[in-house]
Length: 186
Image (cartoon, rainbow, N blue to C red):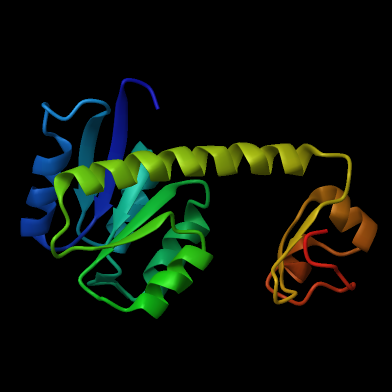
């Protein structure tokens, strides 16, 4: 992460952007020291992240050019290794659960969100994502075939060695029932 943690918000409410800026650039709140940038739409945010990067994204799900969980899916498809904390005025717990299952690090309500909670959520999100990315790199490089299968039997991840063993590419397996019987915990 370096000396500064780069936070990028994709948020169209300029008053809320100002709140985020004040919270994250509060120099009395050390560590970490944050830098902050934002875009008012998903399209602009995706382009800015491509050119400038970031350590974490604060994402509003309801933007002028994207609505609901699809907003997160589009961001995650382009930047799957980036830590994402969703901030929303919506109190829909099923939406929150879907976002977390899809890989978001956290889902926080905008109303009543305090500075300490936001900073802590970002620090934890970045650390979790960093560990997840390291784990994925290890699994991808492993000579043994490995697959992650949900308790419902859906394929969540397969490494290249598992693709070779199963004779199918990851794109054909992930999101579908695992093609062989699996005992939970195995």
